[in-house]
Length: 166
Image (tube, rainbow, N blue to C red; front, side, top):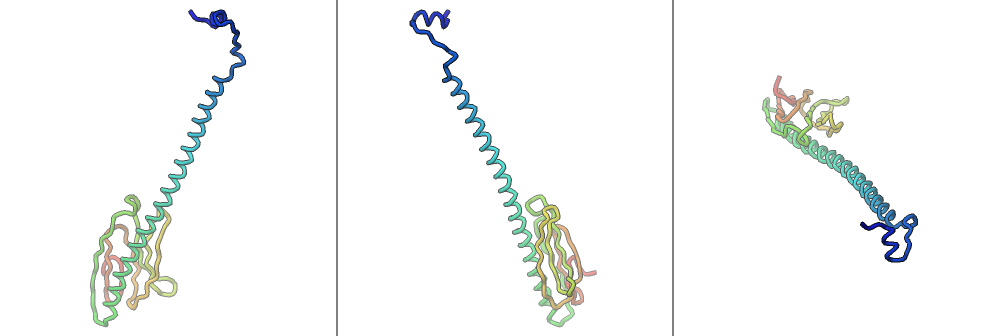
């Protein structure tokens, strides 16, 4: 059985463990290393969450802009047909994704502003985002709203509407 008294007797030296601080400094170093690592990981996770939210907002705005621009180009095509002066009726059925960023429903709205100019708005209420553009048309605008992927742009009696002729 080894005991510190036996070691003192064999070596002839007396050791005082009360003044030995080397073991404490190793434990403190390990504790500080773990604490600093934890703080860095929490900061990294927090920053990555913010980055992902920013990316989601940017991507959703890009998707809304693309849908808005495409619907606007089809409305302009229908308006050019209405400007020929012939009594023409037509319906275009457009197919878009069901959701923005695979989880948010969106709404497409065609309306007029206070001055009578057409406005096309694509919005996602859950993200509080929308893309709004003014449309200069010769044909009248009949206000309409659709939700989802199947959008119908119609020309009915020199009036443009979303959703088919009334």
